[in-house]
Each structure stands twice: as structure tokens, then as C-alpha cells.
Image (tube, rainbow, N blue to C red; front, top):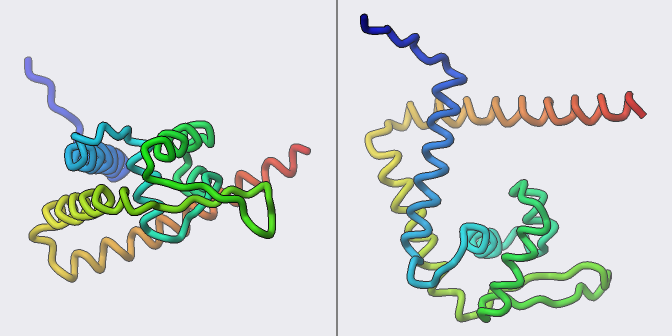
Amino acid sequence: MEQRQKPMGMEENLTVVMMRVRRSVRTALREAVREEGLTQNEIEVLLFLQRGRFDTARDISRVRGMPRSLVSKAVDQLVKRGYVATRQDKRDRRVVRLELLPPAQAIVGKLVQARQEFFAQLCKGITQEEADAFFSMVDKMTENLSGMKELSEEEKEERL
């Protein structure tokens, strides 16, 4: 006898879609720079540095949610390849700033282009109204996530 599958709820659908998008975009990015032999972590570090808002391994680790050891390993490899330079912060010697070097520009260009093409294809056929509804939903979820994080920090303080 054939079993009927229960329809997935919003949380299950959202989880499946987010995981699938993440996996697919990572695959597209790796494919774009396959000949360079970069790891996923190295790709992510390059893209974070390209955006210009993050310039320390600590920033990347915190924002991306990656262990600092993985970010540091990726940075070390990118330095060895001549794609990234490190320099001590002038005001705080404990802080090491990261900088993209010219040899990385072509690779970063390929990554940015691959990311743009991926998301253009992903969003094909989505109306402005649907996009506005999506962004509204994402804003609310981001707010909810922030509230959940604050709650867990408060719980930690209560335990101390």
C-alpha cells in the first residue's frame, strides 16, 4: 500500500530550500574557480574581503560563523598563494588586517560573476511584489533571530 507523504510545513520547506541554495551556490562558486584548487573556506574569505566590510580573520569568523581556526587556515593558504597580504594594525598590534592582492582580483571577479549569475537564475520569474514580500519576511526573520540570540545571552547571564 502506498504511503501518503504529509505536506511539509513552512519550517521544513524553508530548511530544505536554504540548504539546497547554500549547497548549490557553493558548487557554482567552486566550479567557477576549479582550476585554482581553492577550498570553500578560501573562497568565502576572498568574497568577504572583496566586499570591503571585513578585514580581519576575527570579523570573518564572527560574521560567517566559521571557527577561527578554519578562517586562519584559509588565510594562511591565501597568503602562500599570493592572494592575500597581512599587516598589523597601527593602533593595536594584536589585530592583523587582511588585504586582497592584485593576483586575487581575477579570481574574485570570476567568483562575483558566478554568484551574480547563480542568483539571477535562482530569481528568474520572481515578480517585484514577490521579491518585496520575500524581503519583508527575511527582515522579520532577521529581527527574530536577533531576539533569539539576545535571549540566549540573557539566559547565560542568569546562569552565572
